[in-house]
Length: 234
Length: 234
DNA sequence: TGTGTTCTATTTGTCGACAAGAAAAATACA
DNA sequence: TGTATTTTTCTTGTCGACAAATAGAACACA
Image (cartoon, rainbow over all chains, first blue to last red; front, top):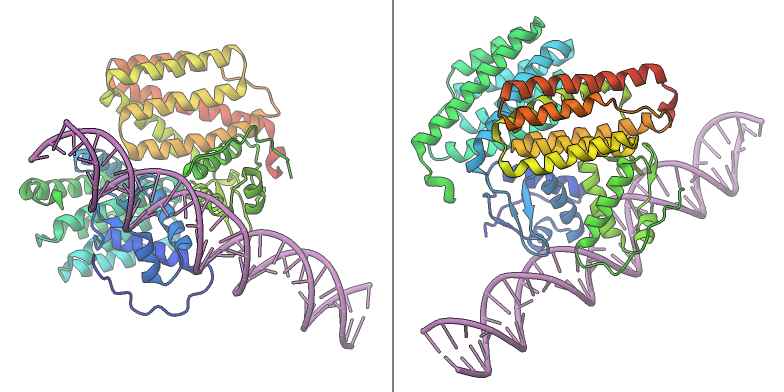
């Protein structure tokens, strides 16, 4: 098993343990540092974080609620697999949420929402410039999550976040061996989306969200077909 | 605090405790046997279910993940309040999910999905006939959840279930004092939806889902305006 | 060698206890 | 009497230990 380094583990405050474990494991799962299907050992985690199994367990229950790990009753728990056979359901949901959240952002945003959206937009552009694939994935997700927040519908935001997380795993899986880059075109589209949101042009925002989403899906599918299914066993 | 009777508590099997507590509390919350805002006491629950606090806690973490309870760090945990100020976001999400799930059911259902849908349809009709409001609410939700399952998109199904749960709470709140009944018309619309699904008429299913959803929303809003906000403090 | 059974080992689910935090109560002080 | 401070009480977060459940090893038997 990989002996993941923890950095420093200073004296943690009461109540912060669960959140810390949850956040860390979540990141490791989404970054594929913990591969899909790999087993999760409570005792091992307890040792690693220098705490008892109880808070570890609590964090695991939360992760299971997010669908990031799966628990076999009385038996092992492991990182959730990526369901390649039903990717189309993922894409369906993703496209719809892209549309809806962008549309609602145009409708409901307030002025104070725009700065953070613009900031993530710039971060994304910088990541493209630097050809930093991982940063692209992360900042793209953050950009769209910020738009969703501006739409102010927690139900949609919740689902969308989940989809973006799952997308982060899928993209990482395909970008880790092939150094593709997201086209510059996406940056321009992001800029258009911001403009439509700012102008409160609901229909245009919807349209842009749809086009943008479908292009991303197409891009991912292109990778898939080129790439074959070599990595799936991983 | 209400001394809720438990029925019999026979010797429970290992591992079944959490699920049992989770299911029971969930039902009590959705049926408003536990009012929004009412406090949840771990020790009390532990006594009631004759088990230690650990599995209780685990169930509570799950419920918090579902948004049914809210936890203040180091301090109390309570049943989530219903957000009346943002009901429109709820309705928006509900209408969209009605549409999408019905549409997808028309597209993706298999023959073995239809019997259970038809069964819930009949149960709902029976509940209308009997003027059993609570049964109406429950069977209506079950009917649409079954349709969503037939649509075979777990992302949408997950969100939709959550919305239907929340709707169950909202409706119960308004039907507990006013003995309204759902119009017979809804039964006919359900029948039309089944027909469209069976015929794989995607556009018609979408349209029916939209109309149906908007009628339900209108019905609820009618109750609201008539009813005023008398019960909100509850 | 192949198959079914028992035993062992590991991992999970549950328990009771303890300690930290926060609210409520009690006290001190003006 | 009203306000600030200490004390108490009550709830939660965490711990270490134990017992049940399962998988795999060891074994018996054909």
